[in-house]
Image (tube, rainbow, N blue to C red):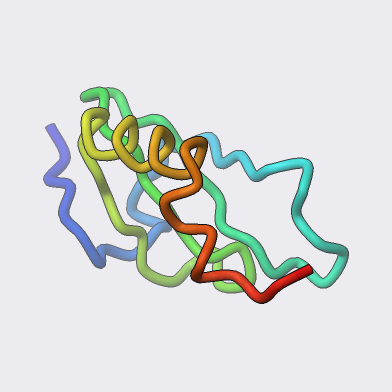
Length: 80
């Protein structure tokens, strides 16, 4: 079994099928996510697909998504 760690090259996640939001902007400034076989989720910068991938547990991603839906991070974005 492959060893998965934070900051690993995304190219080492050969089984990953990367997805990005339909809200991504035309300049390609977005993040992509991929479900991994062990249930964790990898995140990478779409502008640097070979760059590092951060790997989170499903519980961590779930907490983040719930926080986004609840508006917990709204103050991090510019108004508008």
